Length: 334
Image (tube, rainbow, N blue to C red; front, side):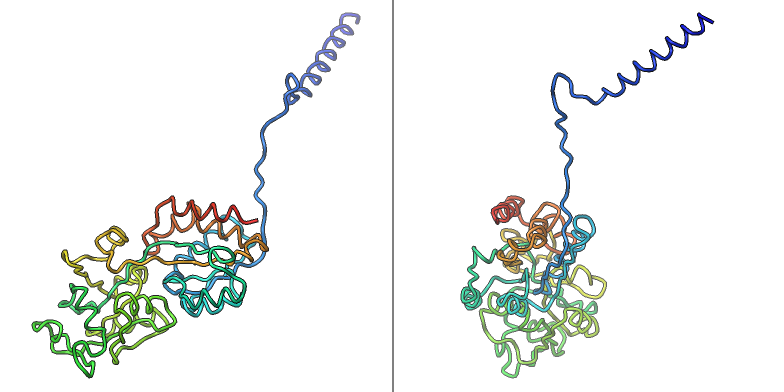
């Protein structure tokens, strides 16, 4: 009995010692504190309102989708595509957090913003998102005009340059081409793509009187795909999603025909003649007032935003240093 009692006493002592040692497993050693800091991502709520360029729309919509899915699921990023000019008209009186544009702000638009107390570079921040290649598209059955010079494109679209009545035939461009009237199409004046084509490519000369201008790019795709004599212009991104319906014209800028591709589109690359930057404009006042707006802006210019998703939407991304500079501007907002 005495031996059993001593054995039980020993077992009890060992158990008490084990518990005591176990309770000190996570205790600081020599007074050091645990240096691990758990990263906490602040959950944001609210809306971010974006509108503007139809050309930029696929890219911005893709960025918004990724952001809402993987970063802030309680933030609603609403992306519209009214057109560059229409979006900027909403942005000036403060209806939007962001205005997308496929061309830079005009002088009069900057002046209108200043009248509202919004100065470009201070209350309004301009971010280039990526580079786009203006693309001339034709019907799949058009086997003759797959390659054209820049000058031919310009002359055929300028009113009176080839014929006074603007009823231009393909044979008026090159004699060996069909004697059939060209059907001209393009986006309407709401779009920055129209303004880029008219101002930069055509030198502000009137378009042919027979041109059919449309608000929706999907309508342009449909019209050209149904008419073998049709030709239209819009951003490269819309062509990449409709290669089964359309053919992109290779443009000769002086050194041989060049097809628009992510490898040729760039300000110093072979397709430079039809390359342009696309933009988004941020109301920095709203970014300071609304955490979700600032957070989304940071995501747009982050390596996970435009830099990663540009190519998937038919745009050539900018250098990483450019996006990093935009990130610094946003970090400075308080």
